[in-house]
Length: 609
Image (cartoon, rainbow, N blue to C red; front, side):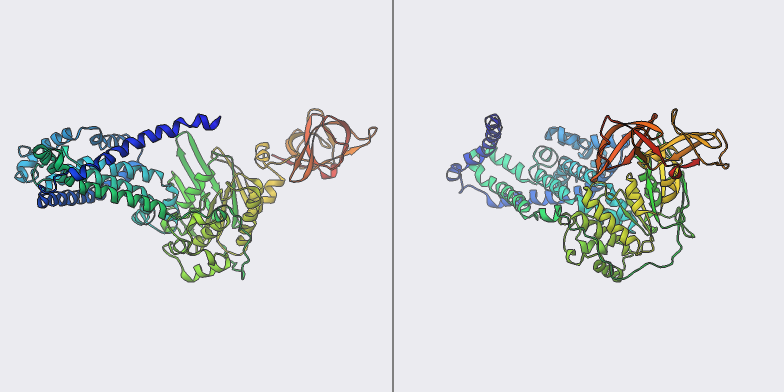
């Protein structure tokens, strides 16, 4: 049934293909009937040379101006840029003769430009070039704008952190990545210029271009004289088609085993590299972005740091402000005693790794490692060996697995002696087994280097593994900051506990010197705690409960659900209106059953908020 339903689609495509091929087939019998003896080959070749030469000059002019214009249109969101983008496309919508008339208004012998140039811009090779430039330029501009829009700005950001200024980033990263699409637009612009008739015949009837000469001969000699004149155009069309097919076949195929393979084993480092460097990060960041306000102050005392927050909390913006990729109303960044806030990103010598590691798609691994402006060849060789990527040096990023990409990105960042490494959700797109292996790999590396590392993540477990201190933010504000153990053991609020995924944590009240209220119906007798005033709202943490025989135990509770997490069995209990989530292999705990529970007061922790 599915095959029957799909049959009209190939037929429709085949009909169009037949129509497009039919004129070429119809021309074959005309080869023998053509007037070969009456052909003026000198004039024909001269016209073909004029068209080829003028199209090449016009394409060069279009390339020199169209690429920057396409980049401007792609990177600007202003209304002026949108209006400009609309105007430069108008020649596509105009009949070619109309384009020629418009050009005569500007370049004709009676226009101010024509009078200034003595009429040299019409009926001349220059006039042909100007006419072809006007009608063919939109092809390249549109292709360039689309190509640059498709280039992730992240590549430029990474290049900036590797020491390259704006011009170098454009010519070494952005333009090479966009070039395949731009070159296709350039080829279309050349072909459009080569075949242009309407605007050319209006602006420069002489010297004859090939389309104009073909029109003149057709008017005087008819169809028999057309086949010899079509040969140059057909030859060019065949050559372009052949080059197109060859370029598609010549593209390297992806090795699915490398792309999807998981070879991200933890590298074995040859020797410890840690020194006693006391550099520490200190930031004061404020930025207003629409309705969002970021206000962060943080001065951690260790080198392994993590920023935790939900999507939209401002954690990636914080990282970009640290790197200098964003400007803020206040952006004070100190690394040890060195102020970085006033420096552009290319002078901060920061290793910045976005989610997909930011490897430039057109560079081999060896070229990636040599790209940092201050790359140290000896350091590069050292990291190549220690991170196990010596066999990958001639591969492109698309030929690497996720683990290999991570190690290449790390090596690239470390070749310029980066003292600050910034990771923006580096494991977000990976499956759990691969993510765990890469986390362990990064943790091992953190122990061996002296650089400050900042991991942005929404995963509390990842933060606990890779950081000694954490910063929790939400809506651009600090919820809590401090050592991992302090934050996880004593969250400052229930919201912090939720973000950390903590269980058996709640908010209560000290109702008497020796009694705490965990919930409306759950009150516990505790030893005297004179440090917390009676009536004070507190946070509490209770690791677990013990199930007791039916006639024992202080509290009645119900099992609301049973879950398996990474192979461990967890029970969700409701005891006197308070929810607990405890690991338990006790088979008596089944969903919907009721039991008596006891509380080990010695394991209860309370603190003021």
